[in-house]
Image (tube, rainbow, N blue to C red; front, side, top):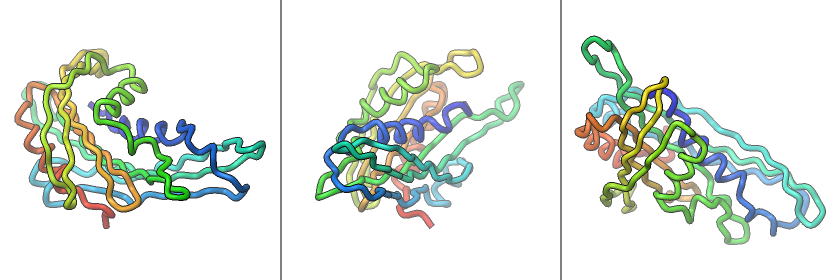
Length: 215
C-alpha cells in the first residue's frame, strides 16, 4: 500500500494551485502563505499500531496573471504520514494501513478564503484523489460518523474502493474528514484492506487525536 502515502498531499496541493479564485487580487508583490504542521499524538499512533513516517513540507509556487500583471504565489502545505505493518503468515511483514494528515493554509485575502478545499465535501475530496491516482476505482460511500477533533465536530465519511497495488486489485476502505483549525484546513485520510474491517476503530481514534499545530 505504499503507493498511497502521497495521495492526500497530491490532492490538496493541486486543489490549491488550480484554484481560479486568486484572480481578483491586485498589486504586484509576491504572496506567501504557510500552514502549521498537523500530526497525531504519539500515544494515539502507538496505541493504534501506526508508525510515523515523517512530516514534510509541500511548497507550491505558481504565477498568475492579474490585470495584465504576473503575480507569484507561494503556499506551503504539510504532510504527516503514518503506516502500519503486520506479520501475515507466508507474506511476512506487510503494510496493511496508511494514515495521512495534511494541513493547508486557508489563504485569506480581504476576508475571503481562496483555498477551494474549504468548500469541498468529503465526497469531492476522495473523487479528486481518484482523479489524480489511476490505481483507485469503484469508490462508493458506505457510511459516516461525527467525531470531535480539537473541539470541532467533523464528519468522517467511509468509502469502499478498489485499489491496484503492484499489479493486484485490493478492496479497501477509505476514511476521509476535513475541518478548519485557525488559519488552516486539516484533511485526514486513512486507507486499509476491507478484510481488516476492525481497523476502522484505530483510524477513528487517530483522527480524534490530531494535534495542530504539531510540536
